[in-house]
Length: 192
Image (cartoon, rainbow, N blue to C red; front, side, top):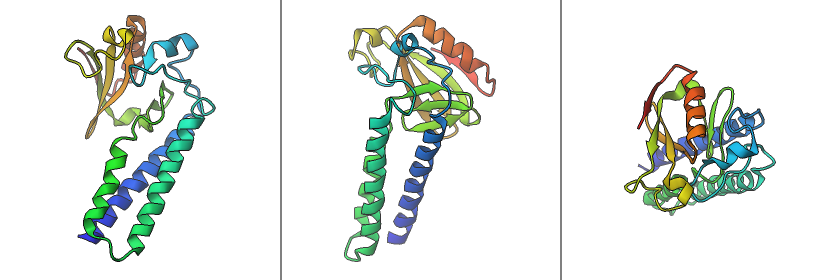
């Protein structure tokens, strides 16, 4: 059982490391949306925080902290492997921090190859379809800010999961995103 958990956690850490390196490579490219400071005001990763520019220099703090987090998890995992007196249930605690690190980087951008969202890069071929969910009284983001209460949440359905990409606070930005994402044709559009 311990060996199985070590293999599973190694795969998860390896995947997170690969995703982070892929994001760092893609962040160096030019963002199609948001292209201006004005557009950044209408797109938010979280309803309370205005997004920073999708460039490496603007995201230095998030990149630094996520890098430290990954190094800490790798070193803790390696130490736990060599400490023979640890119980196998200890390894389950490695999965918990990864569930809360998706939005460490306050970034959303549509780039040429796909979408940057949080700490992941989503290529066009991974997306089945996207849809806009209206933020109303029953929505989880309702009440965070006045702008978000009147906006939409962009969600993308991937092969195995649904990713909450960003909050859009303007109808014009919503239409622009729908128009641009719709050009890639490998997914259907559902607007709620």
